[in-house]
Length: 103
Image (cartoon, rainbow, N blue to C red; front, side):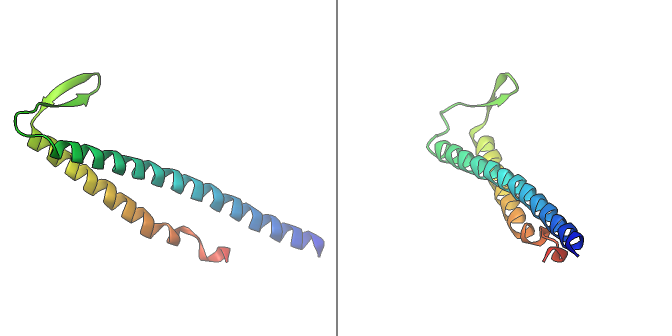
């Protein structure tokens, strides 16, 4: 009887530990996305302050390459859309990741 309870408890503990690992991984990914979102919002605000006479560069590897202001704004806008969508998708998919058999 005690062995059966011990095995059952061990199984529940293992499931709990796996869920903790999954949660940690998910939170880490979410934090990275939030940091990227904040950074890109700052870039968008800075680009909004510029006019056509300003020169914009983007970093490609170790090289700075000249980029049109409109193109830079469009790129940052698309990146913001992508990051926002990724955060939304992770938010709605995370609660369903917990298997019903755990409860």
